[in-house]
Every structure is written in structure tokens, then in C-alpha cells.
Image (cartoon, rainbow, N blue to C red; front, side):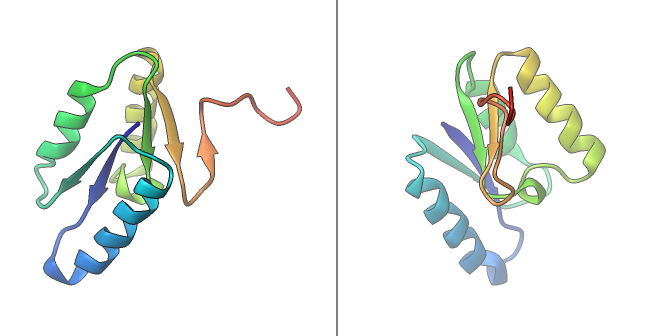
Length: 100
């Protein structure tokens, strides 16, 4: 599992540390953390993901900058055969929907 944790300012370092701790608690193999708006770590993360991997994020707002951005990136992952999981929202595209 791979994941991007995003932190924009030194003030947010504590939040970033909690995000990474949450990801480590679910046994993520590697974490990525961007420190600027260009998001090079997110691009690196996407480049390393392979079919069958699952991208785990601490929360949806840490991954997408807008709803459209989020939907687009999750759709791209699905097309590549990559699962997506958000810990805070308990969203997991790798499990069947309830009642299925």
C-alpha cells in the first residue's frame, strides 16, 4: 500500500505526523508526503503504483484538491487496476459494496 500525506506549513507538522502514524497503523509499505503545491511526491506515488496495489490516504481532503480532482484521480486508479482507501471516511474500493 502506498499513500500521500500532505502538509503545507510547519504548523501542520503535527497533523502530518498523525497522518503518517495512522498509515503505519494499517501497515502501509511506503508513505509519501508533499511539502509544496507542486505535489511531486503525489506524482512519484502514482508512478510507482501497479495493478493490484491499493493507495491509502488518511482522508479524502489530503488526496484531492477538489471533488472533481478527487473523482478524476480515483477513476484513473480504477482504470489502472489500483484500489483506493480513505481511512477517515472508511471508503474502500477494494471491497464489495454492502449487500452485494
